[in-house]
Length: 156
Image 1 (cartoon, rainbow, N blue to C red):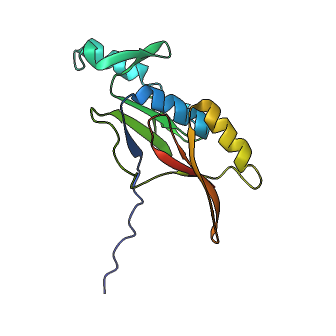
Image 2 (image 1 turned 180 degrees about the vertical axis):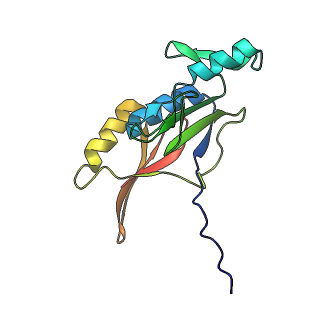
């Protein structure tokens, strides 16, 4: 009997729709202690080649950036230095025209560590998050929050 070769794990990123992807990237970079990706070298190269119109770019943190896309990455993970794109844990924010409607079908759970939930909730509120509710169930306790665009997440 022939064995199937082991499958290689897939690289992935979580993509989040946003009205203002750059503001969302700043919030989540601060919330997770991640870094906003610097794609300026790639953007400038694409502009020089005529492969990207100027209208598809903005200035973000003093450098050229894609208007409708921006990522944040874990600072210890590898990244493509030529493109500025993370190769590990990352979130990508993409501009969409319609506002968020309804409950998230997917959300992040943040785990600040034993006894640090209240401190973390306060820090996240200072970054622009809001508390939606405190949950206390037999299975545990957590705080449901919303980022500046209303996307729910939990602090466990």
